[in-house]
Amino acid sequence: MKKPQLNPNDMRTYPVQKSPCLTCPFAGREPLILADFEQYIENLMGNGQHICHSTDKNICRGGRDIQLAWLCSVGMLDEPTDAAFDRAIDDACPR
Ligand code: SF4
Figure 1 (cartoon, protein in one colour):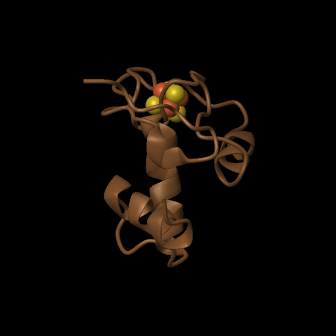
Figure 2 (cartoon, protein in one colour; figure 1 turned 90 degrees about the horizontal axis):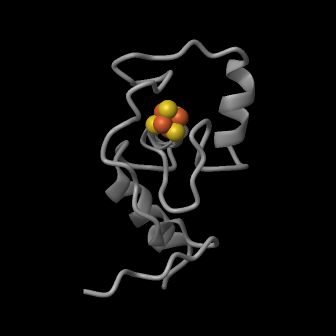
């Protein structure tokens, strides 16, 4: 099966990591200590989808989980799930 083309302007086209990295400061089993927490959070609230192990092939689980919790808390998502995230984008930007 052919992989879908990744579109940097459409987060629905990117796979999200199934689980956080082992050393994820937010949800890893051996979490690293964050030096500047605000910098990481600000990046997720409008500037990026990754906050430490950057990759252009998928979306980071630790960062996505923070985004889901935040978007749900401000009423932009019904529930903090990837499906709700994709539904919200579908509503705002139909394919
Ligand atoms: S890339 Fe994402 S999942 Fe991996 S350590 Fe960083 S925040 Fe956690």
